[in-house]
Amino acid sequence: MDFGFQALIFFSLFFTKVLFLSPQPATAEELNILHNVSFSSLRERKLGSGCDLFRGKWVFDASYPFYESSGCPFIDPEFNCQKNGRPDRQYLKYGWQPGSCNLPRFDGMEFLRMYSGKKIMFVGDSLSLNMWESLACMIHASVPSSKTSFARTKTISSVIFQDYAVSLYLYHTTFLVDIVREKVGRVLKLDSIQGGNSWRGMDLLIFNTWHWWTHTGKSQPWDYMQEGSNLYKDMDRLTAFYKGLTTWARWINLNIDPSKTKVFFQGISPTHYEGKDWNSPSKNCKGEIQPLTGSTYPAGLPAATAVVNKVLSGLQKPVYLLDITTLSQLRKDAHPSAYGSGHSGNDCSHWCLPGLPDTWNQLLYAALVM
Image 1 (spheres, rainbow, N blue to C red):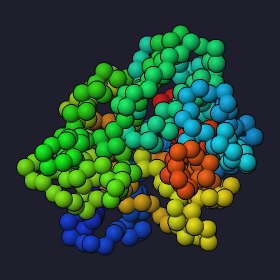
Image 2 (cartoon, helix red, strand yellow):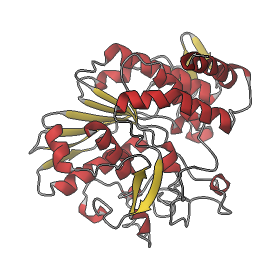
Image 3 (tube, rainbow, N blue to C red):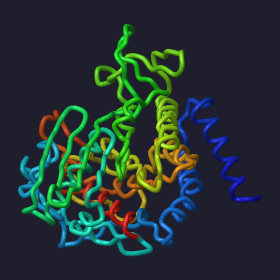
Image 4 (cartoon, rainbow, N blue to C red):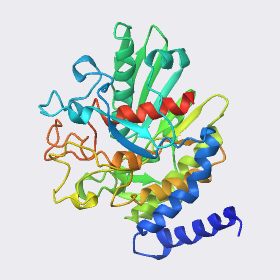
């Protein structure tokens, strides 16, 4: 049977199960099959080099980190683990080694030359904030005397390297689609994306969403979901995520000119709140000081990766997946844990800076130059 036809059948059966019929989550085997089917050919087409940047292992490398937190003015307190008293530094000394090639080292001067006079925007939640601050720090370390401007607002923030006319923006949105306050309360509109008006005119866009789709109770920032004229008190969160991401994909198809704008999707950033996920007796990431060895994660991929793969595989316009999930799952040691700021308990969701998001940006750089 033709491979493409096999993939089509699998997609149809899988999403009928996940989104409409079965109350049971997808099995690890199904998710891994979907991951391999949907993106093996897509990655090759996008990279064109035969190199899979996202399959490999973590290796000790004394040349890291790219910068020190004390030397970067852009890091939020909750990511500044060293300043907050984290006693170990070994987590800063690991580099990502792809299995089939070498990852080019980030060159801040070359990045500034490539994007001189251009605008880059990260669009998403606090994981986008993590990655935006990381890139700003990595560039700043290459040109520490360069004149910069730094501005933070609730929705749009910026770091501008004025000597090179390179602008790094962050657009804060938890769902990509809109939340609107109406008479009934806060409505998450699964088919509306008015925020996209602020994303136009960028030369590089890096999108991210997922973590807030799972929030319930007091941390849930909406009261109802809406699709068309239908109002829902709640729905299966993977189904909602799929609907919202499909709206984003429609926006990409209608608004992106690939000759002017490169588009990336940041991928699903994992959490480490359950030690059993990596075969550990520990309750969470607290006290973890080393990555997992090898290239696989015992718990397998989170279900949200299947939704991302499904939506991206159907796009008409080119969007490059920064497939950071597995390599980040291996970094149980890289979270702020008890060394964040402003969080009660342990933060096993975000990442220390310097730290793992620097590798995400190194992979972004590699995808741009390879």
